[in-house]
Image (cartoon, rainbow over all chains, first blue to last red; front, side, top):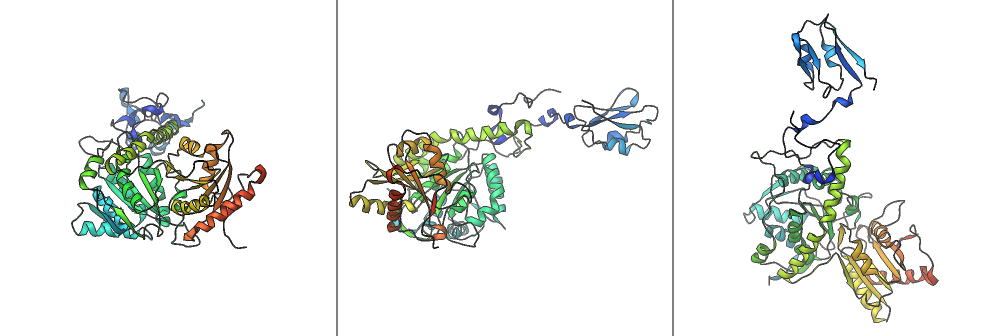
Length: 100
Length: 394
């Protein structure tokens, strides 16, 4: 993804636009919400039927298809809400605690 | 020169708003602001002012509409008092952080309770830290001139901040005075077209009022503080240019008979004129008394205050509001902060008076002078918490 604005760490007060206006659209994609996460989803491919329910229900659109049509979460965006694990019809997703 | 006419100050203020050719007026009626907004409603209804008059259902909506219209690039006006200001409080702060150059006249009235409709500065002090440019004006002419000044300064793209004009309710708003209207060409010369820094328009979509995460919130606050500090030269420029156009010059801090003065009264708003009478009388008795009027409340004119009070022995600060359980009056608190560690810092006495429109006469101010001499005898220290509710019955 092309970087549109400076990251939180780089952004100084002089970089802030008048009235905190956001004039470049789409930069919310740059905002890392993955660091809110306290647990992450892990897929058990033995149980997964590749139905895509996890992909459809993810409120952050953080789940995408990988090789052999399995799914995984993009940890830059995954907040660890656990909706995917809750909705999975085969219970193939486990939420494991983040240790760091 | 414009025509000088006898008129109720509220009507004159509304006429000044008309001369500023505002696009949107959104306001809810509240005493003692009423006549200003009523007259604007008439001007719009009669076709004398080509603006949208939006009769909202509350002050919260009034300020919300103002934010929307200002963000869309419309020159916007509103007006309120006391409880109305309290109800719009949330959005008042947002208008400043969005840097929207709305102009509001605040017809100063006591904030309840007890319930009151009369004049003091308790409402203004409830939004002291809202981030608007705030001035206190003294009379009808002052009010008229400052409506045009407020648009010029606030809308300056180097400023882009809302401006609040404080005027004492009833005591000034409902009084008939001689007010000199500006000529159309003077307004044209003084007040340029509003060109907003950012504008809500589909041709160039922007987001206003976005979420501020902890990682940038402090930076946003710093930027806002720097913005109001940086507005100072344009505030001064607004007054200097006004002097060129209409011949009246205003300053952040104005002095009266301070030459050789040992004791100086410090006021904001309409008390300035009453104190002048007391100062004249005391000077007539050979007493070294002067007066300093604080016009610009935010951004606070620290240097001008220090200059104006340099070398005086005593400062009598008159406050029309209180910070309960705190350092007394908010103005005195600021003056003490400004003078702290100055060489030969004067003794500062603080009188709280004129609450809810109670009359304070030149005689009363002379009594405060006597009391100050007594309190500061032989260099006695007056501490920060030593404030006096003047004239309160036991």
